[in-house]
Image (cartoon, one colour):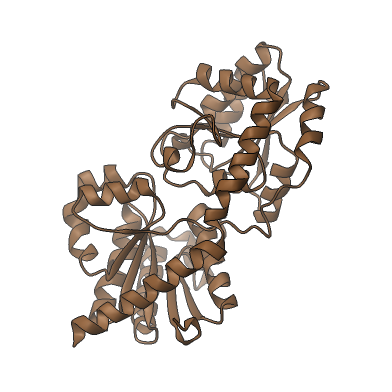
Length: 373
């Protein structure tokens, strides 16, 4: 393969905000360009033009959609293949489906990179609307075995290409033995959550678990990095449970800020109710941080209980608290989870994922030419 001859049109969200799909889109564009590949990035969330339309709901939607469709049409006529970041719900209908139809008119192959832990619920309700557009994809790629299984249940045959972790940013920042000693000397046991502040991510359960952990005599603190509509409710819950002084909302951070947060923490908590392949968990593992997570969705496809994480049922504050207490008191367990996590994270580095993407692009181009012949 000669990657330098490729011209890829990459369509997806970009920061801000620093959500998982946006970060993967931005990172992939950078990594491909570093390979000498020409990448034209088309954001689905650009600033409004003109700026005043941002305050007029119907007008802003119309302006963004019209300019987006025009940009997709132009892009499809210039590139060898389109890499389309896709998700469930209105995101699929507004931003993904039009790309597939417009690209088909221009005979441009499209690789649909589908993400999102709510895919099955969405397909059960709306697959009859999704399927006609999805049939126009040259290839379907998902980041996990979890989504692969869901697509297979609906008669599709996707490839699996995992998310990418930037080891230049996310890496262990301190010797594990030194951190273990500080915990045993009676210092606080610092927990971090790096998710959007939305009900589906179960942060309320984490706050309830924190209250139980502190009642058990563990001087734990919780630092929450993110923003979202549930922030005021979560702060009220912390106050109601008497743990406001132990819960810090640090706001939304960029990648280097997240890495610094992991470096200062003792463990990462992922209390979500729905998930696919959470970047936040992979980043924590890459930083040598032990992880306590719910066992929902695609999480068991990347985390194994007692090997590289502790897994608990969702919406169970008692189980989450018990896992945190156990982790805080067991130096050997923390060390084992850290070591295994660092070993397993290598499969998500660009060195190992690069060839999967290049092969997917070249296969899509070859298949499209064959069908056109």
